Image (cartoon, rainbow, N blue to C red; front, side, top):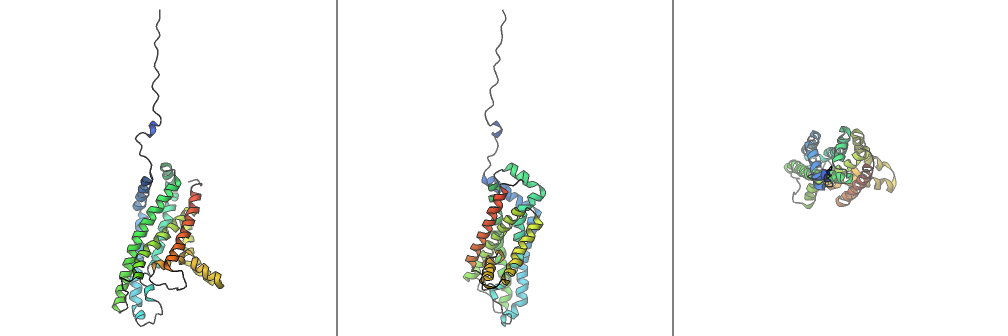
Length: 278
């Protein structure tokens, strides 16, 4: 009589064993990854350094050069417009940084790795926006404050220095950071839309510096309003104690309009980002 042994089938592995021990992907982890990327890229350091050098250095230089003319009123320009004059050029660095946050990963192919690790594209975009805006908000406020202090030093020597406790001066110290943060987000949206660094930088600089002035040539009320609403004009009054152009929107209205433009561009770019291949 033969006996047959019954083989007991092995127990089925628990479902989702591959997920055991894997860290849960949270927005905080995505945020930390984006912060690591932006602070370890060499171009970020150079871009932010140029922002500070241009913002503070050029302001000090121009105030040193025109302080005498401002004192005898031969310049014909508002004194408060000069104490953040360097940010006119420093803002290019903020725009470029925003663009690079989007385009650098496409040029290196790193975007595929990013999306493989964090497939929720809107979360990735939100993390990039948060890190970029926070960094520029802080550094922009520091740069704006240092620029005002440096420029006001030369104005004080001529007896025309600004009162640093003046509400408009304090608003500008913080407002410089707010303006640069919004400008960086605008650059992020532009870079994500075009996915090409040189093209996005060219379009961005054209919009901020060229088109904003050219639309003023359009006759009538249309030209006046287009000038006020262009990205390079709408938000810039937030970063100045007094504007060279008194016809532009006020600081809070202007930054609100500019923030709306940046948000709209980012939403359009984000929608395309969520649907296009990496």
